[in-house]
Amino acid sequence: MYADKFKYLGHIINNRLNDNDDICREIKNLFITRCNMLINRFNKSSVKVKCVLFRTYCLCMYDIGLWKHYNITAINKFRSAYHKSIKKFFGFLRMDSMTNILLLLKQITITHCLNIDISQPINRC
Image (tube, rainbow, N blue to C red; front, top):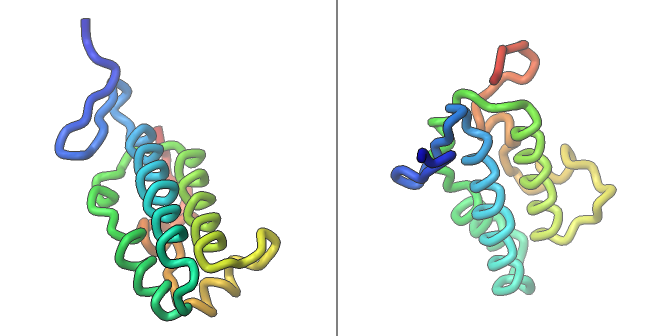
């Protein structure tokens, strides 16, 4: 009897040796739990304070450098969660342009955060 997945030093390792489960954990932990906590506590704060809080609490992704083998679907979910959390935390509408929001807030894109080039076709698991 073997385990399908286990957590080692905060990183989820599964029997397929891909990082999709760890990406889902990061989505749940970072963007749902931490962003909702920030929304509840700092809803009335100024935009500058919110920018500092968002960078401090939501962009501290230590194990993101270990992600090597993942599906593009998992990264798209991660990107979508990042965009939704920014819009929700800063009070933007769903239909607002993410590019304009990132430029206005001087935040980094998730592609820059992941340090990947999505224009290059790479074989992923």
